[in-house]
Length: 299
Image (cartoon, rainbow, N blue to C red; front, side, top):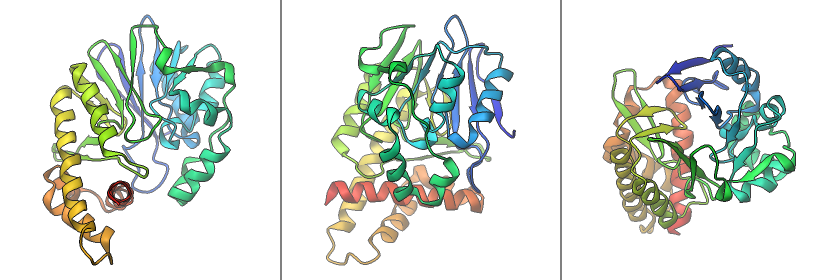
């Protein structure tokens, strides 16, 4: 089914799901921990649920004890209906404000279509989850997994720390390794975005002193605290550049001006020039959404 499984240790696996659209290769992933307690972090999209189930079986997991959701955007939680049905004994742990949307995802789906258009169609709609399956992350206290409430990328975002590993979702932005071996990091700050909230969330994660960070998009890296600090600095750089542009009387082409300046001045975006054209088109969409989040916050 065109998925990939990468084993980082005896217990930690990254399942990279098939691309849902051109340019989405090596972008949507699910983390699997297989041990005394076995769990996944996020589920990917509804359209790739069959691939995820096959990959979990191939990785040797016959059951899941828990399903952890970092947030309920469709590329992270879109398959939760299918996956929770397949593993009926696994509690679904998420932010308390996400619970109502998982029970009745109709508003979430309409908002996703409005924001992402054809990409939402490629993701597929989210199926409802039975209320008794859902657990508020703020009161979860099992399996040595520590939920950390980290609003920023979304108001219902939760990160999870297990042993020395941080499952960050998008609380630390997007970070992945380029074919050349270099790194590309960008914010994930769609509307509505609140800078102070995102900054406090990153500080909360830094204070936990994790060694490894598992990104939702995409990969595991060892220098977690340094990468979180880099990302926080990046957010302040973006705020300065975008605020300067919004302060100008000329609001015409504001978003394209901001994108051009950010690509020129943010060294963490330097890898953009190395990307394949399809991947560049995907990144342009998410860069624009992130800029819109900052503009909304500033104005």
